[in-house]
Length: 375
Image (cartoon, rainbow, N blue to C red; front, side, top):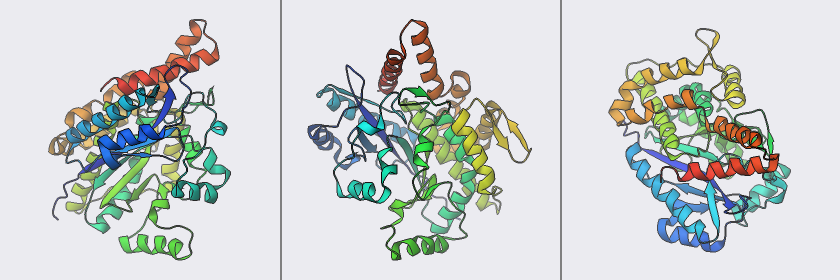
């Protein structure tokens, strides 16, 4: 079994806010034109007018992805500044009202608005997608089936959406509660082969329900356009280095599962009913509530689970040159996720005698700082 290159690509969605008020702002046409002049099609509009999406080129390793993402984040930030705007990378804006936002006037987004009805209007959310290259089609399906087990772990570490419309939701990732209202979302079903997956997609296409598999928005899917698997479970990360660590873990887990297949082994497949329980725990608690270890049949604290994951992919991290990025994930169990940090900023602001509105602005200012910390 020849070893794939396990190339990676990362896509991120950002929100644009007014530099002074920190409220959401519409992306001016001149901003998009300026970004495209620098980065071509690596920068594009998103569903809502306040959003902007970036995507790296195919990267051989995480070091190359770092260079790409740093350039892309800097490009958006620098050009946004010309219009009095700044980007943030958070899955939900802390205090914006979705009813005040409007979708981008493009055919694709107009069709989505028509097809999804009122559900689409609430899509004031941003995610992070990681592609990992696997040329063999059946291997892509096999990896998707097994990698689904680890999706809650990746979500827990990425959580960055505790607030919605100025209120603490009690969740670490409120983004998923919004996204899960769309059809064809959630954990991917298990297919036995690429052919079975293609037959399922073709059935919906032939009935005219979808144009292609880009309208399938599972947490993890075989990409419709590239020879990759695409993880879509994560909230977008305010910090560049956290994005890279999560991308590295996704890449390493993929290689680890390939190693098992090479040795005629595999990760045990669990029903989506069980994995879904861990998905909920990650969505609700982030890394603070622990996840279920189905082998032990008990809830295990996340620090222990992360230690086990890092040990599991140690060989792969060395082979892929991302051991430092994998080790950096340990900081999450010490300092918390973005959701934890955002809540801490709110508490500090309220204790300083600020009112709730001022506290939400303080959280947004904190997100602006984190976006620019590693540029």
